[in-house]
Image (cartoon, rainbow, N blue to C red; front, side, top):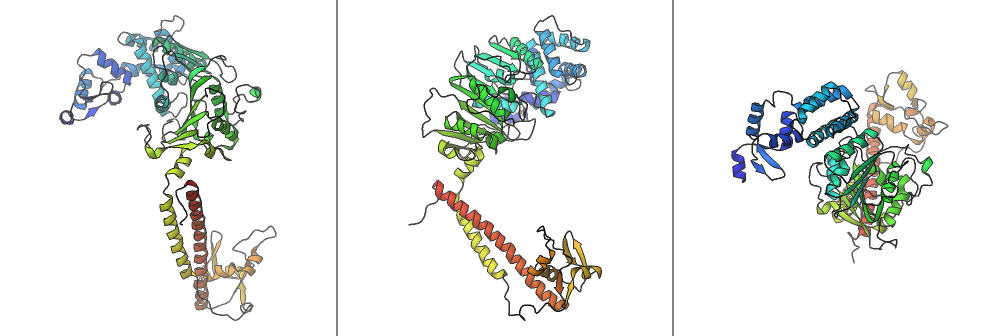
Length: 551
């Protein structure tokens, strides 16, 4: 349909937007399209992503009373929430078991009635897919990490390699199977999964059975402590491991053969999962790991990161857009690993691809622009930190070193000129000790009501006293010594400090000089920082080839 034709029917909406309008899942909208002959025909879009005229959709919803009454799918979900509460995975498992034809489970009466009603018009697989989608949406809105978020699944699928027929895919922490079944969608692909939560593992298997995925097997158990697939070697391992878990079994697994890159510390559970996944790859096999961004630079994991780089195992690190992991706001990386075909050394020219998508929308394109990707030589990564954060490497490669150097140099030159103007001119005074005669203590000034405090700073409370004059003399060497305790602590308000007695006009003259000196000191601190930045830019620019010394 042309843009002109599309505009003639008014605003267009997607299937997801129709689902939100009606308060149902996208699977329910797909069912309506098949079930009702009068459902609006697509008014635009592509075959796999049709668009519908909003006016036609609203009219159809009004006729069907879908917009006015609660949909049967919503009523089923509400009944399940009432029956199972926080144990929704157990409820999903029991419903899926009934739909799969198992005789064992007995559903609560209200749930069973609504399942039977929906099963008359919906295929069991569509009904389970709709419930799965609704469960994922509720977990996202609740901020739960119980399931891999849809955006993370999309990212893993995008960066996953093309698998030949008959490949094996493994997920050692598969949850309810969303990531595993999404990545391994090709018919005939062997899928193996393990999940610690028994209900989640059972639901993943039942959903695979309803999808007629005969090559899927998911088992329950703790993958790290009780590996159910000890001899499995997969073409691809995908994993969204539990994050921040310290009780992963380090003490009982200290001598485990899986730690060929180094024994993970208690705080580095994610690197234990990574090595478990890597241990299940055959030569040439790949691993896609969803990792918290902090794993890329934490000190405790430096040795393991070093081995990943040195052996040529880590091939790509992708910093995903903020909001990808909808259960929290923390940044997420995708580590792409590959087991070398042979045990030989790594080519000296080997690089690790760094992709930084943190400036993108979480629902936007996952294809990096030229300025979002760089290939970093192994030798540059093998330093004291072995930082695998993509942004830190991209910034150094796409910086405008000549522009930064010129701008900082000009700013420093301007600052030095301002410093010269700030420094006051002084005439010879009466000599050392000439102001020691008539003095008064800060304590006396405070008792007379001439001094008050702004935090820890003494300030004038009278027109007879100038604040800059007061604070300037308090910062003199003699008063600093008086106000410094035996432990070396200095307090500006030192009540034993003394200042010379002067008339207000003389005070203001001295106060102006002290004020100028304070401004000069602040300017010097800024000049010092500019000097540091300028030297750093110059040094890094020379080291990367972005700058060159003049002949």
